[in-house]
Image (tube, rainbow, N blue to C red; front, side, top):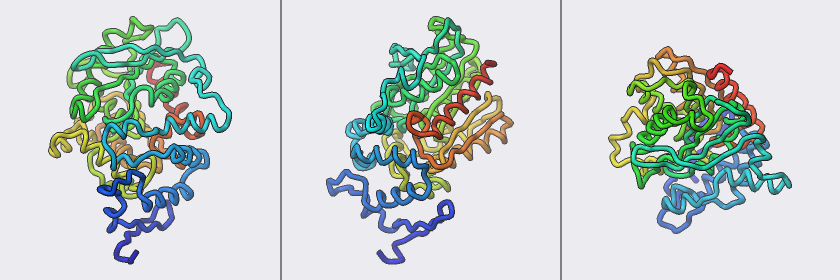
Length: 370
């Protein structure tokens, strides 16, 4: 490759040459090859060796061993069948002869599948309850997946951990996904689920006077947006918002998007694919629900932001922190070195995930007055 085909980026003190001019040659589009491109894979592996903790790197290797396809090269149905990082956690546990039983990994938490009311009808949901008679404070939790992929089962470990660490009833909601239900269906469902929780949590050992919002990635965006929508609708103010590597703006040219353009398990091309499935019109990219950093933020409850260093969305959390502080909203952000997007639910095999879960639980317990 010629020098003209290289763009140099310094990443955490390391020089990395990215073949940006020839990126189209690495997509595999039109070739029938759905595997991640060779150049992108080589870059991701190089990044991993330099920047990732050993346990995080082992998890990504386990994920690679499941042979995931490059999401940006396949259709939605195939993408939803792709192995997830949660699948890789299970594989790694089995390799190490450890139990994959959620009851053993997160002792004391019971779960039941039910429904809550969404904006257009009932939504599947899973309730996670700690031991004891209650009533427990409540966390309405929204999973990740770019508003297109995943569900409550994929993010089961995260919801269980929050229930355990916060000693709270967690309601994990399967909002409608794109492209079957495009923007803003998920946001409408999230607000409807919050309304339902305020009216009905008491029937499930919940304390409706103490209700927080939480979510990961796309779900972190929903948690923050729901707090704003609840304020504007005159609803009860959430006790807290926990947003784990949330999407907070729509530009794909932030520092972390460029720095982690080829990262795994989330990269820049995947985010563009998600947006393509989500939006009917590019003008919707300007909507405040995608550009939370430009929304009216005054009057929101305290916010906790968790970000990962090797993540295209890291700058989204940093920008959100700045915007919240400017709006005089109490906010605390913790950025975890050596881990990637989706690390939070991998506490069974990743130490930083255990640390992040404990931090999240402490912040929620404080907000609940526990």
